[in-house]
Length: 143
Image (cartoon, rainbow, N blue to C red):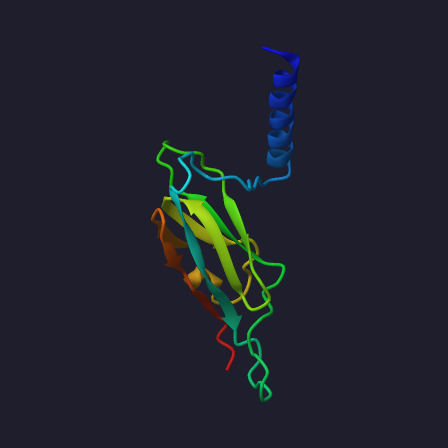
């Protein structure tokens, strides 16, 4: 094996070991191999609220979701790479992520609000060439 190829393998192994040492590894590559066009898209909105009992006119009672992410982990059964994909959320909770076709478990990176355990994790199936809508509502129970 050429030394350039060996150094790439060593670099990948070192990165993986560092990720495992800190407790999480998120990969921004397709979770499964496949030909171009073999994946689909999951999109939707995550809303968490109400965060206060009374909202002013024109104001949202929902939590600002910027800085949060959804985590999509493939249901592999040994046939694919179990590496997760991450979909960052916009302030309004909207997101969109392209994934290989298959079944995924969806969780959130930091979900400590009341109502999280009843709303997550969720399961979603991705079909090649299709857009799948997955809206998630986390009701904090504040009234």
